[in-house]
Image (cartoon, rainbow, N blue to C red; front, side, top):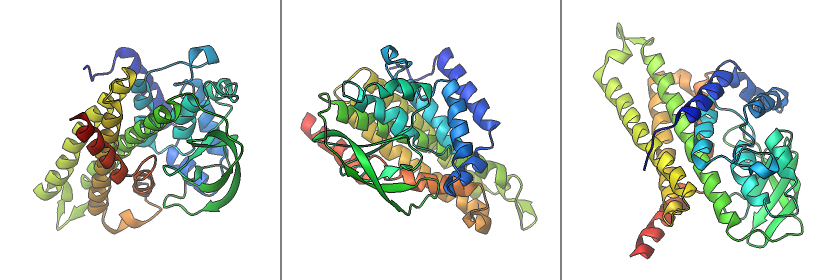
Length: 326
């Protein structure tokens, strides 16, 4: 199994990173959290020019028809920069659900970036993310896919991730296996975003310990600090190949792909949690303030902790696959 990216994927990552680096994403995310979605929607349009919303839309519907690994490349960068909006729902989840249904025509609008989809799914994600800024809101479950009526807003640990209750309408059947594949892609994209968030928090911590002084020394000179951050780097070096490997297994439709996705989701989530704790510790009291940019990734990684399957649920699926395989 080849884990390294090819030249086209590296160029794609460089283009996304360059765009987001110049976009002042923290300001966009803070505005999104207050209900001002204009900067975020403008950023959505710029990312659409790079083809991000079109990634998993089939070519015959105007998309790119990219691989799960291409999806991972994009979502690690979206996570690293803290981009707000229903990206996982629109790019990873919706195309797999909509194909073959009466809503299939929406795929072309998704690919162009003019449509934004939010989806609530029974038990896994009962609330619709950013339903107030989505152009289409659906509910998916064993009975099929339906247009959902948006209800009241709920408070989220991350103010830039607004959650809404939904009431499902009349459901139409989904293609066989579509829901399972969509949920695996959503979990994979979430894992990639967690890797990106962990990477950003580690970078932020490394930069800060090179500036903060205590007892007459830069705190980055203390071995205890170095070792703590080195442990996070090692965890990241394990998490990223797990996510890439899961993407390749999904691409090959391997029987072990669901297990690989769950393992990647668990480890990426736990790595982001560890990175957040370490970054918060080295920042001290300022790290607890919303004015500090670190708070964006701390809150985002915490919100993604249970998104598209909790750690406990994914651990249980790994165990189930291992015991069933015997």
